[in-house]
Every structure is written in structure tokens, then in C-alpha cells.
Image: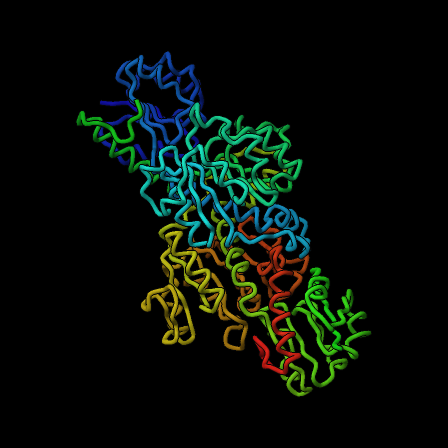
Length: 314
Length: 314
């Protein structure tokens, strides 16, 4: 008999409970709940937002942690390895949602939905906002990071008439929708920027990508460029981004992720007319529970059978 | 020497003036301005929003009216014909902007951008909104009206993984991106509805299409459906739409056009969480002046040369 502690802000505990046999599911609602039950559990399901290193001491060797997210920069992987803890992520679970979210942000910027929503709330039929709209068709989109999500964004962007380029650490291993001459190595990223009007960030956070989008990137982009970040906040130097927006070096930002989350109430990003802030919900959708449960059940079956787990990181 | 009165809420008078020789351009700023100058002009540039039938008496035979819009249901075409007035519209000028706007509305609904903008204004990092989001991938989109804009929407939608169907008066003359078995005649429209989750309206307003989207359509759609209207307001029975939203018969509406424009301040549509209201700006973009001026200059050259005008309706 196994016990899983599930600590998540969606009701996946109930769908997992229904879909599994021989598994006791504990739905934790607070850090304290987790600490009360984790020592007796052999499975822990959570996400980076809910994880705290305080949980480490309750993890015994052999425990399996299944994250509901793709990014795992918030988890202490070396500690997991030291303690004999297995860690799996949710690669591919969120691709579609994140790429649809990226376009939602891009169109919210180009169609000026922020000011239009303000007008809607005031019941104000002002058509002047229309003068500030722009077309995406025919403009260059550079997708920074051609993993599953970046590829998914690139595929959709081509149908919208974007001139799509991609940046990949190792372009030679790329095999996707973009022609080979449109995929460049990170070192050549700057060559693309003067013509880039939409920079979409879909790269994992690593030591190499931390603050890879800095003041020099914003300087190299044209004034008419916008940035969409559906990757991880620290990929962008957020102070430099804010300065670039304030100086008019770029004309907009669609941000689902931030250096500090929740985004502090005092951040000027909240109040900007040229910036769309969403609270790290790019991966969400109403079939998340179904999709996650399917992934979990498959991994749980493997785990009970002693097979190797899917998406194993540690 | 010709005189053009230009009555429009964007600065096209100056771009047209710069791009033409031998043309006196009068930029009218009010109905009274138009009445003062129209009798002495031989060209009138305006849009359906600015048009009023009071202008008719100032139009002499031989006057050419160039509309900046596609739809011409607001213009008295029979009166134009009677008076020997030529009328041209701006077919294809707005295709890209309108289809990008349609996706902006569709994604604003599925990613719940309205509630998220409200939260942004309050600096509120609430992730619960994420539970209400849905994916478009894999769902059926039905495009009602496969003219230039409908075709443009259909082409983009396929890249997003929509299962795209189209409705056309005469499917036999369709030649576009959709397979023939995905294009049905208006009579078969209802067959598509039970599986349609995004209904996009891109049909011209005619006697046949007035209120073609009525209570029976909303009943036939699943509860999970949303409607996007970038065509003309009266294509939809707006009272029936409101009733369907209130009853939960559909889950959202993205509306750029309305039965009465401006949308009256008292309309409940303004205040709905499940409805995105934009003020008939689907065709707008910051290169509108450039695009329109190119179209006008071409037609002006034809007009001076006595050639037939492009996009001539009357």
C-alpha cells in the first residue's frame, strides 16, 4: 500500500484518487499539512510554487516526487540525489496551453486589449485605441528556446505570417518546422534582434540562461518590438526590462513569469499600459486534471512495476 | 483639379494629400464640415460610422465615394445609383487585421484575460483564474462566411489544431485551405453546431444574414461554446445572445460589432465577465493609413484616367 501526498492548488487529488488502486491519497492544503504527512508517504505530488526546502527533512530514501510543472529550477535536485529521492517533471503536459497563452499575450499587446478592457469596465466606446494597434503578419518573431513549447509556438506563428526564427543551443540537432537557416545558435542571437518585432521566451532557466535577456538585448531590438515571456522570470533581467519599457526602447511586454513570484504589489509592471501581467498560469487549462492524472497514472503503474519512470530528472 | 473631402477618425487626410498630385484634400472634422464642403467636392472618403443620409443632398452626379471599410450596409446604395454617384469599398484592406483581432478575442476568452486584467489593475496575483482556462487545440471552429476574412481565419486556425469547418452560401465555388467536405452550405449549418466550440462570424450583413445567429443557434451549440463576431452586429440577434450567456447556454462571447453602435452605455454586455467588448476596431492597425492610401492612390489614378475603379459596388 502506497501513500501519496498531493499539494497543489487544483483538485487533482480527487481525480488521482479515483484513477488509482491501492493508493492512499492525502490532499495537503498547507505547508503544515505536508510536514504532517510526508514522512509516512512514498509519493509526493507538487509544483515549484508550493515547494519549500523545509520539506527535505521529511523525505526518506525511495520517495518519488512528481512535479506538475516542466521547469524544475526551484527544486533542490542535488539534495534529492543525495537522499535517494526520485524526481519526475511534467514535460509536454503544458505545451499546448503555454503556446496558446503566448499568443494570447502577443495579441493582447497588438490589439491593445488592456486599454480596451479598461474602457469596457467604464462602458466607454472609444475607438481611438484602434490607432495604437499593429499587425503581426509579416513581422519577425524570434523564439528563444526550441524545446517542445518553442516548437509549438513556431508552428503556430508560421500560419500567422510571422517570419519565424529560432534560437537553440545546438542548432545541428534541430528537426522541426523551421528551415535550418532560420535556426541559429545562442551566439548568433544578437544578429536576429534588429529585425525582431516579437521575442518569445520559451527556454528553460539554467545558469546559462539566467538574465540572458538583459539591457543589451533591449537596446538591440527595434522600438517597435514586444517581448513575451512564458518561460521563467529570471531568464529576463526584470529591472532592465522595466527600464527599456520606460525609455520606449521596446513597445510592450506580455509576462506570465517574474523574477519574484507572486509579483510584488509594488512592482511598476502591474500598472503599465504597455504590459500584460498574468500570474504564472500559462500551463493552465480546464482539462489539466485529466491530463495530469493520465500522466501520473502511467508513471504510478511504472513505479509499482519497478520500471523506469517517464520524465525522470533525478 | 479635383477636391476630396475626407471624413475619418484617423489621419488619412494628410497621407492622401502627400501621396497625390492635383488633388485638394479637405479634412472634415464634423458633419457640419462635410456639409460645408461636399457640394464643391468630387470625391468623398468616409466610413460607415461617419456616414449620415443628410449628406445625400450635397452629392452631385459624378461624385465618387470611397469607403475605408468593407461592409457597406450602412450606405444607401440605391440612392447613390439614382444620383449617379460611384461607390467603392475597401475589400481586402482589413483582412489581416480583422483575422488577428478574431484570434485576440478567442484567446482573450480562453485565457480569461478580462478577469486577469481586472486583477492586474488591482495588483492581485490570484492564480485561481487559471482553473477557468481552456485549450482551443482539438476543438471545432466553425467559420460562418468564407470570404477573404473567413478564409484568413480558417488558415490560421488550422495551425492552432482547431478542427475547422466553414459555412458558405455556395460551397461548390469554394477553393481555399479547407477540404471540400469541411465546407457546408448555409442549410447544413445546424449540423455542425452540436460539436462547434468556437463559432466565428465573418459573413457580410445582408437580408439573408440578418439575425441568422439567433436563439436556435445558441440552443444547438454546446454549453462550452464561445462566439466571436468580427462581421456586423445585426448578423446576431443580440437579445438572444445575451439570454444565452445569462442562461449558460454558451460560455463566452468576443464581440467587436453590435446591433447599435456605439454600444449603448446601458447594455449588459459591457459588464459581463464572459464577454469581451471591443469598439469596432477589428480592421484597425497602425499601418492603416499606409494601406488605405495605397488603395486610394491606385483608384484615384484610375478615376483620373477614366478607367473602372477597383472594388466598385455602385
